[in-house]
Length: 432
Image (tube, rainbow, N blue to C red):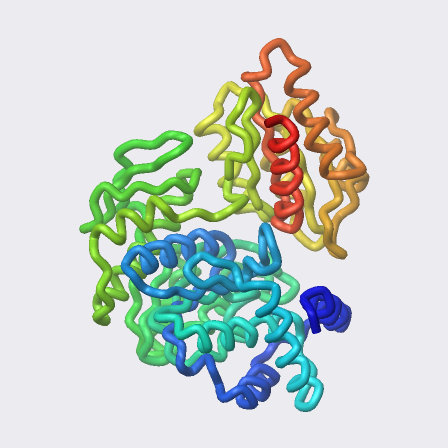
């Protein structure tokens, strides 16, 4: 298969739905000689913040001179973004070759889901590329996630826990935490973000059961020294003058978790200098996390906030950096998310809102989203295309007395962020 045919194959597999469990993964990986068993993995789960934590860890390890593999989902900008080595995306040719190889085995042994195929592809790619370290992001949950076939992670890392995917993971934070805790393995260290007491107890109990050393990253121990829209500088325990460029006070929480992981890696003999830590933290980048796509007269930001906790963080970030400004929102959501809670936390802030339909079979139609938003803010319209929404947002912002008073923020789902980046790139090229 070529790349286009490989994508068609994955799309055909996607129509068959998903089954959670590790049986298929173990059967198929055995046919490939269990490539995952030779990888030194850092396994990351959580509801919000996983991608940022992974970006920090990956960046630091690369600055320390190591060859790193990174496996993330979903992709934000490009399909090949899911699998990276030293920040470079897997090539379309390698994707096509690996999926062809996996398809042949799966058709003989047992059909796999899209995520299982992609996870096997990642394991094969990293093993054949001789990566020093691999950072794996769970797809959904933890215990039954396809990535959880790894046996002895260097660290099991858990970011913040909040309400999401309740139809699969459970209706309470404690039930969701229990699913995530499944990545904690016997005698392998666990590093978790400080959680509410009842949630933290779930992880403490799991670590006792698995005889796992537990480290809690306590963001309350971070001392913020300076902060603006571009940089945050803070101290955390022995780490002094750490600077990060990912925007938002909540990113300090993610950075603190990453620092505790780095500290744990040092204790098992991995050489990571203070210089690598400082350079890696400030150079870490992660798209669609209150990312500035236009720093001109009208500033334009993109954020993947799609659930209640992420929307709350987004609201706090907007108020922190742009209090007194006028907001224009572009919103697109998935129908199976708690989008009403996202609306409740954000819609009242905007002077004008444009809804769009994300490019996903799970998308909520722009007109339906418009109706939901109108219950909170009546100054809302639905756009037929994302390009129309972007043009409309700029047009509205520039129709006022002072365009510099306006900030455009696009959010609601990561599923349309890749298209948004491309629309903004075209706009920038046309204006240059």
